[in-house]
Length: 336
Image (cartoon, rainbow, N blue to C red):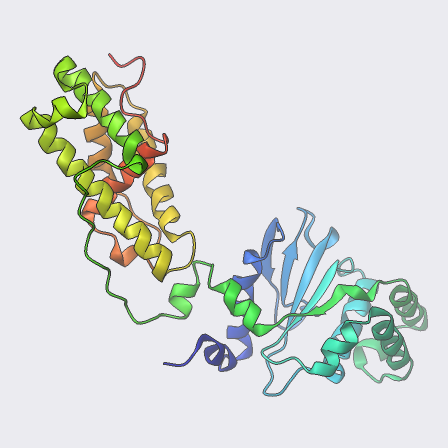
């Protein structure tokens, strides 16, 4: 199976722009939205990340995609930079705060040049005087002077390149990774068997279950020792611990076999639905618990690498994980 890097190298320009659009939102920058512009009349914008609702009229970043069979060099980058300045002078957009060249291969000389912004601006201005690019020659004399003046006043540290290995590593954290780079299915380990002794990491959800039992059966089920002597309560607790550890085995599997956050996505998917059920009016916490456990089985999970491994028992267990974090509470004041 080809590596993700080889897959990206095989993309055509359109596929590469789609890949970049998937990657950009994963950056630490908080974009209001990300849009793909590529195509004729794009004025040199392939993927834009907007920092304000004003879009191209506010602060924004440009991701210029260049998918060539050889490394991106100054001779290929400079025309795109000229196009950007010319479009800004024509009023198509404000100059972006960052202009990132994204390509499978970046020439070392371009990386070194961009590392010295003053040298980059010097070379750009020298080329601007002699260029025969239509994007510049089609401008009026006043517009050409305006382009030169704008470039002279621009901090050329805005121009950057990005390493493909870093891109792929960050793309791995997105929901798009699973569909773009499907991996051979890994067998999920057997479900964990609950240990005989209750561990401190399950204390809160077990206490919530004890509250439910005491509310339903009275003080004869106020402690684990008493529950062990109560047939219905002890059987119920056994099943809930099996569900909790089923979800725990899923959490550990996700931690080792999938990108960070996938188990948390399952928690959030279940919570977003069952919290509405939990907010209903019930006579007993037992009724709320049963209603939530039943509804968890109907939750449609967001499609991720982990989704195909989720079993029905995991969904019940996820509810107890949520109770363990006090995101769900079974016995509530006001129950009738």
